[in-house]
Image (cartoon, rainbow, N blue to C red; front, side):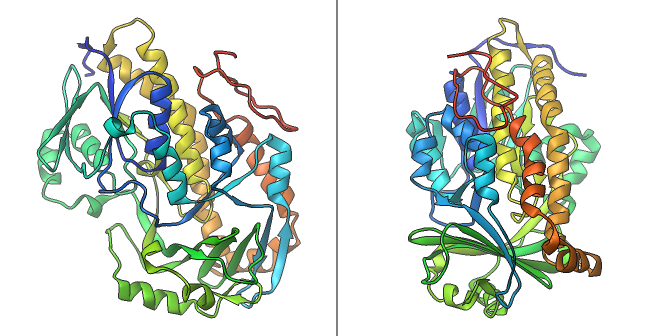
Length: 449
């Protein structure tokens, strides 16, 4: 039974996770004038490490609404074309998808080193010195009729009205939700197990993610994707640097978390030295110039959660919908979910009604209902794309090797993006007009400029 007790003090939101989804959500909360704190388990939020990402026009629009779009353009790697290669460097397909996207929606696709996008959100978050706590690792979450208490491993406690879990694939918040949602007997048994043993997030692939200095001969503004037996590479070159990812199938799927050693990283990289990631440029040439502190080897999990909330706790991003980076939609969906969730909280906290566990759960339900089907489609699509591009079985090889090169992939991609981009959510309470293209935006802020 859901409690109907009230919270009389000013609402306070605790965001667990200081990655790109958590930080965007923090910006939205700030604009909604909702009190919040962000808890990040790492000691540093903006370490220069990790993969790149591509943000599509609906997320560029959300950045524009916050006044961050022009700043973001200074950090981006311009993308105009996409081309597909074989491992020997032969180009089998090239199209100008990125330019078509901008014409359709008014905003371009933005290529970023992930850490630079996180730094952008971090640097421009109002009152970040008091709003973000680093080295704040969650150990447990208590829920009562009047609020939540988040216990941290350093012994401190953060109190608030509700918790937003944006803490990634190995989510401590998700573990807490599972404990609260289970009967007491099941909870006691669960304490004896490593949460990863029963994790819904399964890794069938792993990959090297990184940033490298620009290598002479790499064509700028072109997103290069090499397909081949058992692996996929994605590279994009900017003026001075390039972002990349190389992905391959694991020997067998696993739910266990594994921290790869430097020796495993080097051995994995050597496996792909002869793969041409740009026409005429082998991966070895790029790897030899990489600063090892800017690259890492990690599993690429996939998974989906059917219920995103319980009581006063709600989750979003990789903690509920995880796909490999190959499809490129995870960050986009996570950020849109942040906007949609904060819309619901803004309406709830400004309704004049009592803030109860029941009313909070209703807001969470509306949020989930607005996003879950689209997220489910994206996650399923990501599974297919990952296996298609890596020739994960003879049927995928046949399709990618013999059929895809003859398709109008520019038109297909544009058509697939049109609906999720044009119908994407915007912050309802921030007046904004923004840019438009050939296809109008379905949703506008409820408060007009």
